[in-house]
Length: 308
Image 1: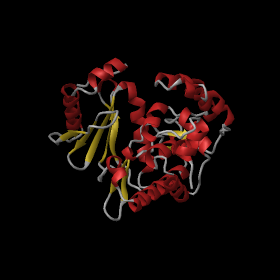
Image 2: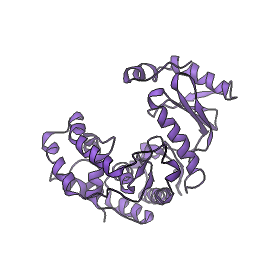
Image 3: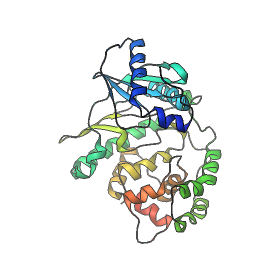
């Protein structure tokens, strides 16, 4: 009952349209033995995701993103019960009509910290970033080999080279000013990155939007989710999101998170991976975090990824 979605134009026409999506989601739920269960679509997220009652979540992936659905199901199965923070438990996954895939998983509960982060007392922020560091330490310690058939990029050095070749064009597409664009090739050439690092399982989008928490006087993380863009590669790549969206340029919080993680990374390395990240959007980050008085990439690296 869901239409074929293979192009950006089809995505824009189908995925946001509940008159098209809901009948398919209801039909799939019926096939999964959940006929009549209340469906509530989550507003956020790139994929269509529905709460099924209070305890389940149905995530749908059109043909254009079908591989992401398989990857998420496999990664969640690999992680089940292994992190210090809960991750969704896969109840079922498979294919639907017209190339669609689905993952039916347990629902995590808690509050998303993203919208209230600036209002949280300092001690609660410190406790939460400590738990993020501890969770990433475990995630990166797991053997990713069982997932190598569904997660890329395979050749990390080749990935870095491809992303470096595309970096200026990607940022120009986001309308980064020329004064910044002209710095990118030289900066990337100046930062040595490992071509064959010890492989780690990467979430790739470590940001408060992908965590849930109990935000009471004794806060704790209650959920870590959205593993569809997971990769296998250098663990520092995950700290792009950490510095930009978790500690948000706060050097003391990044230092605390690094201590909980058990390692810290040079600011220049994290800035290089910021430019190389698949979803890199430097103008957005500048609007979010600002720039130092010296408008250079080394100064930006220190401002966003430095520690005290």
